[in-house]
Amino acid sequence: YVRQRLSTTRHLAQGHSVPSVALPSFVDFNLREEVQESTQIPNNGSAPLLVDVRVFVSTVFNVDILRYTVSSKLLLRLFWLDPRLAWNVSEHPQHAVTLSLDSLWTPGLTIQEALWVDWQGQSPRARVDQDGHVELYLALTTETTCDFDLLRFPRDQSDCSLSFYAFSNTVKELKFRAHVVNEIVSIKREYVVKDLKTQVPPKQLVPCFQVTLRLQNTALKAIIALLVPGEALLLADMCGGLLPLRVTDRIAYKVTLLLGYFVFHSSLVQTLPSSSSCNPLLIYYFTVLLLLLFISTVETVLVAALLARGDIRAKSSPSPGPRGEQRDHGNPVPNPEEASRGVKGSRRSRTEAADHIFFLVYVAGVVCSQFIFAGLWIWVPCKSAPPPGESAPHGGKPRL
Image (cartoon, rainbow, N blue to C red; front, side):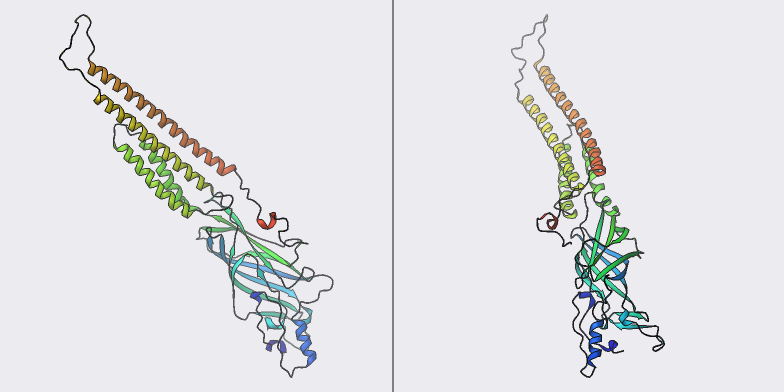
């Protein structure tokens, strides 16, 4: 078995083309040509070579929605037929042998969405049986990009794809048949894998197969950290409207709530992801809450200013003393202090009535905003703009 003693720098994970194999000088030239031929793709006649791929997904350990990346661990099982590696069992009693990857042809795979790929094992080996069936296992850890659909964050659900391409071959030479197996046993993560599927995209110039992960957010962390504080501040602001206007601490109460919500909103902007299209509805929702708190605080300040100005005018108005007072016992003249007090009371009552009407309108507006947001959450779809590669006149993926 000369093929087991060959040395080369080729590595499958890098997806490089097959280099020439270095043979000792004493090896026969015919054997040299035979070994060189074995590192080329097997000839399957007019049909492409069929490679059966089984993808085992063991874990998805990091989903970063701010960077739009997913980290996962996979195990690939590749199986194909190479008649050149078959032998006669009567001459060689072994039913199977293991060969290094530099002594036979293997498909060089590249993940299109990968930022980095760590292929486990420095020198993986393939198992070849007596009929020439080749079985190869490859373990890898990778971080890939994903186009998350975050419109309904934190109850979002996205499909993330891993596209495996064999750039060293054409579709006339090679064809993949892919299957996927879910071997994820850990569910103690924020994002869980709800579904797995594979497909072979049609009309491609390069042989490829695609693995799609459907990820769903469990939402518990976001609900506790985002929705509960926001709703609590809004409820506290509505309760502040029940305080009477004569209480001077009402303005301080409203301003404190507004400042606290400003701090909460600034940290919220850094927590939620942003996108060129289909931004999370929570961004608009919390912005509306900020506007409601601002309007409520401004109304409280304006009403308090009107009351304070009325009190200042009442105090600065002249009150005639007892000197020069003439009373007609038959037609008594009303006391000026009582008249001033009556005007002041009527002005205060009108202001309090206006404040009460605003409170009712404000509560109705808050309730309506909740129903409107729920309707948008349920019925509004996400319509993203097409990516530049597909919208450009000469862009898009290469297809036949």
